[in-house]
Amino acid sequence: MQNSNLLIDNFNNHISLTLDEIDLINTCFKKSKIKKNEFLLKEGAVFKRATFILNGCLIMYFHDDNGKKHITQIAQSGNWVGDISSFLSGKPSAFYVESLEDCELLIIPKEHLEELYLKVPKLERYFRILIQNAYVSVQEKANSQISVPAKARYISLLESFPNIENRVPQYAIASFLGIRPEYLSRIKNKKM
Amino acid sequence: MQNSNLLIDNFNNHISLTLDEIDLINTCFKKSKIKKNEFLLKEGAVFKRATFILNGCLIMYFHDDNGKKHITQIAQSGNWVGDISSFLSGKPSAFYVESLEDCELLIIPKEHLEELYLKVPKLERYFRILIQNAYVSVQEKANSQISVPAKARYISLLESFPNIENRVPQYAIASFLGIRPEYLSRIKNKKM
DNA sequence: CGTCTATTTGAATGTACTCAAAAGCGGTGG
DNA sequence: CCACCGCTTTTGAGTACATTCAAATAGACG
Image (cartoon, rainbow over the protein chains, first blue to last red):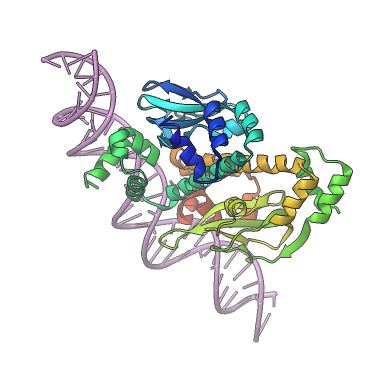
């Protein structure tokens, strides 16, 4: 199970799992493939399955009052993707999750995850930390939006996600940065 | 305990407490007063005490790379205030929490809260929901920052916090909206 | 190849900021 | 009680950052 190690490695960054626990976890997560431009979640639906990316790249986005699309998350292999808030609250999501490439995913439905918590309570700690980190990162995003100019946001995105230019179309990067693609083009070509 | 009802009412919005539980909770929270312009938290310190506002108004803010102050939260009576992330993770905070007026607070240290969880497990649910809501609201703030112009953000702030003009100085409202005070002045006086 | 979509470029515009100065307001002391 | 001090808010003029719209160019893929 070569690929699944990515998931286990991720767990092991924060908690220590026994071999038995690793086996159990591996049986609970189901591998799933989706093609480019397919949806994992659409606005109005409840996000019910925790989703870890083995391969590929996905985006999360919403539509504003004028119907404009705004990308809030760009996620690649080794990360979780989806609307945490809908997952936790059980309420309909305001977001879409869509693949930018063919993807391989590991998926566990919420109710199975809760059963797994009973058998491997350490996992609760892992997911609590995961949610805390998500909270911090959305907070940092809100803060940088008001305190850091677009060019600097672009540069630090490149640092935290070095290969993003090769994986993600320009217009998606621009949207994630909160700017228009034309302006990102100017930033990149020093025409600003 | 007239004032404490505000706290209990808050709990009762999401969970049902027995009279005994209410009494226990009331003994665990300590009333505390702070004067105008005092600090509840400074950057670099760990936020260790859950704090509920009975009376008064406080702000949370951080300093950006240029030393500019950015207000991220304006909290009045009936709300919790503080850096959730530091509270949960035990890591030093990047934020300040400062009073805008004389305040009456109800405070419980983190370790006492955890003891209280053992006696009143329902509270875990309440705080889980509280954190989820905080996550949603910071996410909405990040989203509105990139999709809603300043004037519309100002109008919806007035709707969600009607008496804010009388409680909070203009410059603080501007900072919370992510704009300069001069510009907020122009928005208010239709000079834009 | 041709088509479709993504990116670049130009010109005009809009939104928000900077700096500086003036006006308003609240508290304090004479 | 009012005059003054310090701080907040307003106003003006100039500027910077980012958008819009349109057209040209470049890339990807069948």
